[in-house]
Image (cartoon, rainbow, N blue to C red; front, side, top):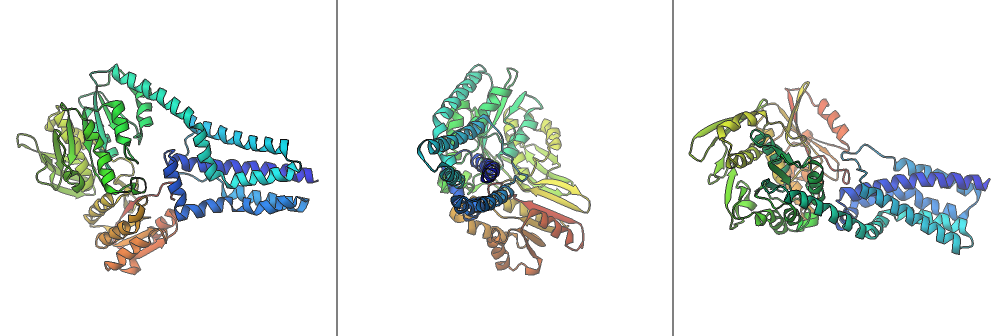
Length: 522
């Protein structure tokens, strides 16, 4: 009878351990496979609680396994069933990608488990009980075990990465006439990349890094899998979480032109200071040769205040000294119109289906690059009109009875305030829906409180997701005199939509969805 319970316990243990390990690997992947970022993620209070909750029943099972009789083993099986339940996969916003690296990590984890069991069988006399306890301890230590697995696999991963990088470099060397444009910024870089692709494609064969493939290996994969001899321009988005990340990509692709879309206090948990962020973004400018140009968003105070000895082309919407400045901006539910002047001072009016100053600012940057690369501004009017919203970046979505402004991708203070400015332009019933901002380190409370103060006169209702997470925004709203009766706090995004529907239909509703926390924070 005990043998049957042992087999049931072992089976349920394996299922629970596999589910927990998949979750841990997913979080490690979400933190870019970087041990320091992953450790900082673990140290966040809410994540500590989440990890404890996922391993709690395994902890309870330890004394039950130690006793070892049929009744205790049955109770341990019940604990395993509860472990399976709490670790049951839920739909992720960014699902785990089973890359070869992930598969190698899972294989190494299994090997560590098997080695532990084998050593117990060889050297421990009372192996059944001790083996059960070791398995449970390994389960509990999985958040730390992944760091050991990463360390063990590191030499192999470095060798594989080096091979891929060298192969991508070879492909680029075989295309000496390829024009490479680097795109970076704390925010706006993906939008500018997509806009540039549309504008430049009217005259050139263009390849862009897809989605948010903005790491060195993402760029390498794009080059190895998609680069063709007929491509004339390569739009290379460059992301960064640490000092040196942009330089690493530049050392691979050697960009001819670069555009810095914005700088702000994003990823401060890994960068630690705004000075580190500025220096990292300008690693792109440092890589541009004397024959190239650096396009800078002069609306951004950090960019405008950082002087460099390069050929600069400035753009923006508010800074009058910008060479390419969009002005007379008008916004409606059908889109935006604005004017720009070319180098001869001739005015061209543009129409776009996109809304908001932030989108116009990004379009201005794309126009500046495209025009510099030889496309007349008059010829750019049609592609600008054809531009579509990048998903979840101030995307205008019309639904029955309401309009959504979906700005849910990876929010930051400047983008948050720009989205609120856009919301304020509408005459409809204006509703803000947000869980706040994350990854701001010591500034997290202050930055969120400031956007709460800023939002007070930009929206009619505020639907906040997460009581503790949005506490700073609540404090900011109330401090600025926002009516408490029009501030609604809920636990989940689903509840938020239900509360939006319950708000009285005084007139058509427009809902700004600002940020949707990533899986490692949601």
